[in-house]
Image 1 (cartoon, helix red, strand yellow):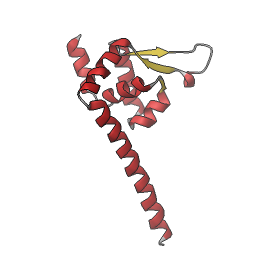
Image 2: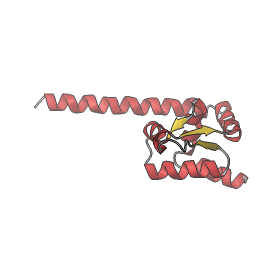
Image 3: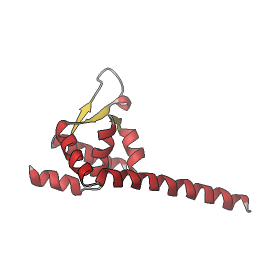
Length: 117
């Protein structure tokens, strides 16, 4: 099981899934928007995280799948605690903030360039 967990943690988007779910339960769309990964990558990571016990899906069978959420399990929270001790959570959240800053700056630049025409 340790190798399986290590392989998961090496995968693109894996740490982001754990870190974001540690903050609160999230919908698929919210995770996708926050993590800047493709739908196929996120689907794979959530499935892997569920299979190894890091994530628990909260599915509402009476509603559409749009409102389904994912919650971090105790095992997942234990991993995030280690990430916090190593400073990874803080660094990852700073990375997400930096990505937002870059995206906003790009939009501002595009608007400025269009206004100069």
